[in-house]
Image (cartoon, rainbow, N blue to C red; front, side, top):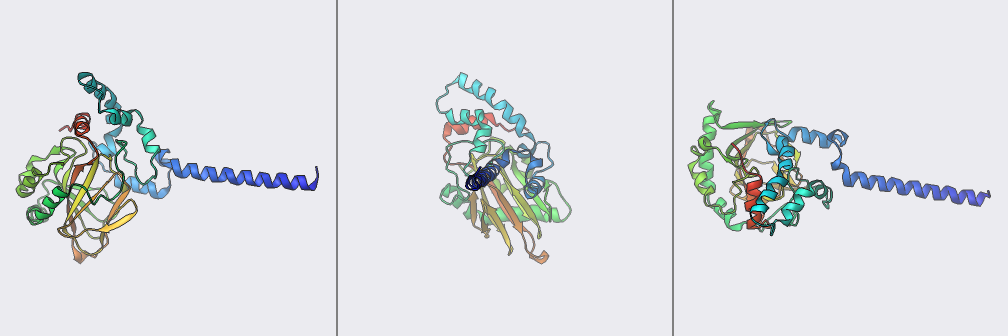
Length: 313
């Protein structure tokens, strides 16, 4: 074989190897979220470890596989009693749950329980549920007063109603009025002004396991590590109650700051994290958060999803 031919083959070999390398990188970046957790990168695994919780009843962290396995028989029963009309997206979501997760345009969005196709998909959602958000903003002082009452008791040594969530640094406490669609009656009795507000929010998600209404308190130095919410069928709203400096929320790679009396609304099925980087003397960051239906979910789909993901005591 001539030296020219050998050189040509060597060059071709290098090109082929380079192409294979590029393809492998693309496949890894595109589909790495389908791999077992042990095979993911260390930073992501650390986020999963701390973003999960210890509750055996948590839908996002513990119960989702069992729930997913029950969805198709439930949907078939609903359709048999009525019709399949209008249920096509839900059926597609159930039949192709893994495919929908893999086919996201970006790994920034990965709801781990239920992905409903065909919904507008952006991390921050400024132009939705304006009437409800205005009601929340107008009720800022009433919500804050309820919080001060329950937090005063908490700091005085009465932890009733409060829960502590996992974080790698700092402390994160929550006080649920609605937890995974279940109304916490004893907590609601202590927050009458806020409960009254909730009854006035038409698009509030309350009748399934994805719906929550919660006071959330981050102490200085707390980091809620990156994680995904369970579904893209909901949007989460925060209103700032007490916001010291250096407190921020990052969703889909874009960071924003809370402000007292102002609302942020976002799709928490996108990768998101929260930090309180302030000093001890700054005190806690306090927000009240509620979950709304994504506006692209139809009334029929809402009813059926309430049935499929019905809350249990």
